[in-house]
Amino acid sequence: MLYAYPVRVINALNNILVYTSPSCPFCHAIKDFILKLGIPFKEVDVSLDPRAARDLIIKSGQMGVPVIDVDGEIIVGFDRAAIVMALRKRGFTISH
Image (cartoon, rainbow, N blue to C red; front, side, top):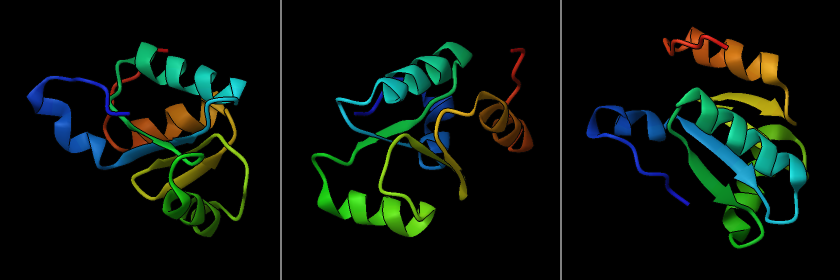
């Protein structure tokens, strides 16, 4: 699912991927967290996309979700501090 954001932030969408599945409560929590921060991202539902599921395993070494890819930095699970740190390193202003 692609969330709608102003044109000025569309380029960031290519750099933030959130790998999810519909039955994962932590996936819903991580999406809500990132949306509350106002950060654009692209959701990748691995239950619908076998290629994305393979990519997830290659990137993270994990078969479970959520996994977030912030411009190549892989964060496994819902780790708020790691997510905020990765976003700040890439120039996002996070007041949280």
